[in-house]
Image (spheres, helix red, strand yellow):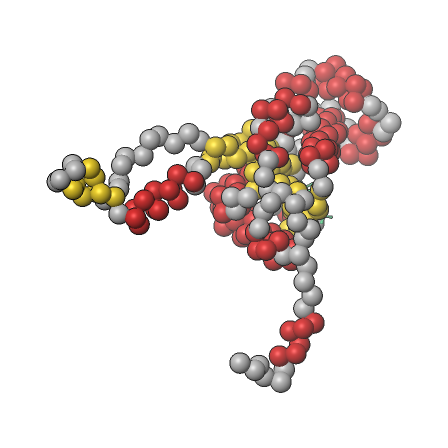
Length: 280
Ligand code: GTP
Ligand code: MG
């Protein structure tokens, strides 16, 4: 059927299909969360409620999109790894980025009152989103290592900084000056000798960030629901073709569950244990 004379404008929409057989990493980041966290009284350096809300929104996304096998979150950001062979929205970039970012954001807002029952939202938060494609497992591993190393650097700095201010009575300017030029070992020492804080004993949630992995569950043997008739002559059950097909389909669907961890994802141990995350 011929379209209207205006339909030619559709031709200006360009395809944005992402390269096939490459890993997709979607990263979302809170827009101006420096301001957002201030306005909503987030605890410094880490607000457990805010981090748990981020985790909740991330889990919602993984529940909806089964092609996400792994997610890593810290502060106001979350990264999601999609299967190399995903055919999600025919790999159309704008469709994937906009829909997933939108669901994450609406989930964040939807679940806000559960985590901040006494803090009404002052204004609607937003998140930016981008997809980066990685050709091989090496880059994917290094990507996640990069994000977790960032968590470590930021959290160690922020823990030392806010200890100096909140417990040590320094001004923020003084705390900045004290930490300027220090290396990791110095910050551990400042925390331990001044505040008896053993950084390595701090909750791994803050030191390692949040890791969601999708793992296969071994389902219990399902009860035989096939509709059977008995052929009296042969005493063999007659299974309808349709029931057989349904059963086959059910068997192919692997049940999965999503687990939340706060573990190291830089060393081999994690990737050896969850080797399936890199498979098609
Ligand atoms: P853009 O992402 O560029 O829009 O800026 P941004 O202000 O969101 O900064 P960025 O994403 O680099 O950093 C996140 C900011 O969120 C941090 O600098 C903090 O100010 C704030 N933030 C995130 N998590 C927490 C938290 O648990 N507690 C507090 N107090 N602030 C947090
Ligand atoms: Mg941000």
